[in-house]
Amino acid sequence: MNTPSPSGRSAAVQWAVVAVCLLLFATYQGIDLRSKLGLLETLHFTEHPETVPYSYKGKDHPSELPFRVPQAAMNTEWPDDQLYGLHEDDEWESLFPRGNGWLTLGPDDTMWVLSMYHQMHCLTVLRHAYVAAKSGTLVYTPGGNGTGVEHHTNHCLTYLREFILCHADTTLEESYLVVHDDGFREHGATGMDMIHRCRDWTKVRDYLDDNFAERLAKGIVNEDGVELFPDTE
Image (tube, rainbow, N blue to C red; front, side, top):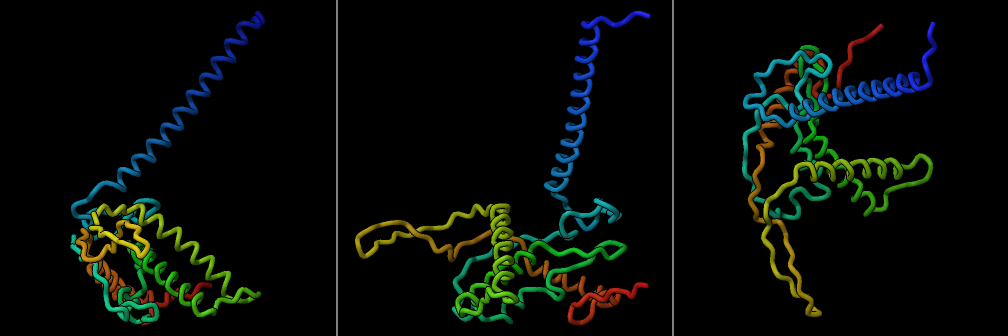
């Protein structure tokens, strides 16, 4: 039997390395392609999302609410200081649907939370944290509320920062000239009385209220929105 020469063994090793590299490259390309296809699916506008069939098995589910939200225009206003004030909990809560933004979809009533109301929840967290800090009621001793409030606040700051950047509102806001007492001049902006292109959030709230009524009828939640889990052995 002939023994391969050193040069032959070296060539075989080189080809094996090339084959492994090609295999790894092909695997990476396949993973990258699947990732890009998933991104395209997320970015693709669906004219009537409520008509798209899903099995709700694994990843076969909508990435957004399966409901076409109509467009709306919003004129930013500076409300009375008492409207949606720091301590007006009832007014802030009126913006939420029953169930606080949770909903179920699919044949198995899979639970989801709507991002819009997660963001509104975070705004509420920041409001409460500010009020607590201003009133001096944050306690950092063992068993106190300070650490938990701070952790939740940090999470919400990160969450809201990312979504403000995600939506990238490109509305142009008018500026005005400010002349300070020392003569320094600069431009400022209030952002008030500006028209923004939006989606009708009240239709979203109505959709979630209807979803809550369906869950209530199925016995999934009670009147207070508390989930009712079936007894398990």
